[in-house]
Length: 386
Ligand code: NDP
Ligand code: GDP
View 1 (cartoon, rainbow, N blue to C red):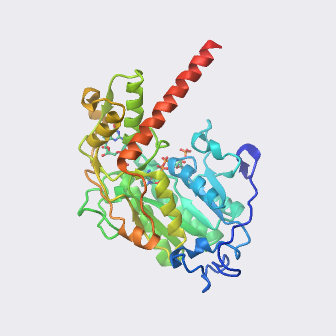
View 2 (cartoon, rainbow, N blue to C red; view 1 turned 90 degrees about the horizontal axis):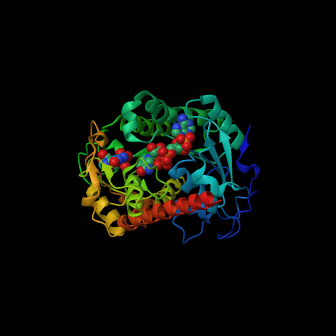
View 3 (cartoon, helix red, strand yellow; view 1 turned 120 degrees about the vertical axis):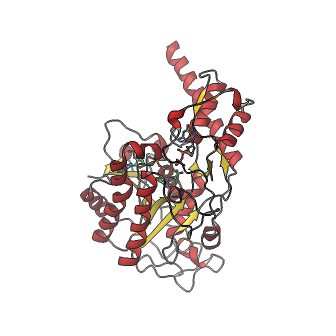
């Protein structure tokens, strides 16, 4: 049964024309017309040419739509006039906070990466042109406490979905959410598509399996399958267990007098942090290419956790050194010390580049947590008064 989010669905308007009549990408064959709009790079003409030729609205199925990236990608695809479906697993409580603002525009389909028949049935019901596999057990520390489950979701889940695509429609374009965690103990810096992998956690190992099975599906069955090797990307919608959000939330609580100290782990770890809203566009661009390929998506800059604290506390006029407490429980059995991505291939081929600086990203997250807490404080006050 197709589950409708809020029991409404926005019927798609027809696509907008910017090319000449008859020009464009053929939704049936995937071939590009010679009359593609000249100012649009050929690699992007699939998009530009969605146009007069494609009379039907394009459809995308997103796994992991309730997550950070799923919510941004859904917004992005809706703006591109896609019909957007999201695969959601059964849960006893509703966890749609990140997509509640899209409730009348998307359609939710029950299914789970652990269950092959649910994936086949989701593909049959939605008949997508594109599938974005964002679902995963995505938190590194949990992968040590639940390594088998992590392997089931994050590694074998990819095979289940690819097999379902082969059964239902091998012409579906597939995006796999791979991770810079696959580089792990890095052997060179910055890391690019040719850098050797050396994962350092069960999560990294599982993601590496997902990456290679995607490459293998492309090489064995000629599937249009792309692996995006995305470096850490954050936003106000990031889970509170990840370090950037843990810090932005902690800073906001301390600033508002709700908390005195912030417990923190390894201050020397370095990450290449970008904005999630930018990164979902790179996912989409990968699927608009003429040929499937793998791409590193990053900012090219790296910062320590210490610098993250400095910027976040500094933004509200506080000195982080007075407010942090080292917590040994937050250190990892094996650490990824340094990540910095080289996104030249994505820049050159996809025409993609990041738009939000590290400082702006951190400030955006702190500001968002401050308003979130202030809003919840005033609603508690109103509720209390009533
Ligand atoms: P989140 O943790 O925010 O979201 C994960 C999503 O996966 C949730 O919607 C979750 O659903 C869903 N999910 C988990 N297990 C299953 C399952 N068995 N069946 C169906 N759905 C499931 O992750 P992000 O949005 O941050 O990341 C998206 C993807 O990109 C992930 O695969 C992540 O590993 C990868 N990635 C992320 C990076 C980042 O910095 N954010 C960097 C590189 C890769 P529910 O709400 O029910 O829990
Ligand atoms: P990851 O790169 O996917 O593991 O993203 P995280 O945000 O979970 O962690 C990024 C880095 O921050 C890792 O090197 C962690 O060891 C380090 N770190 C330091 N303190 C913390 C903390 O309190 N929470 C988390 N999650 N990470 C921390």
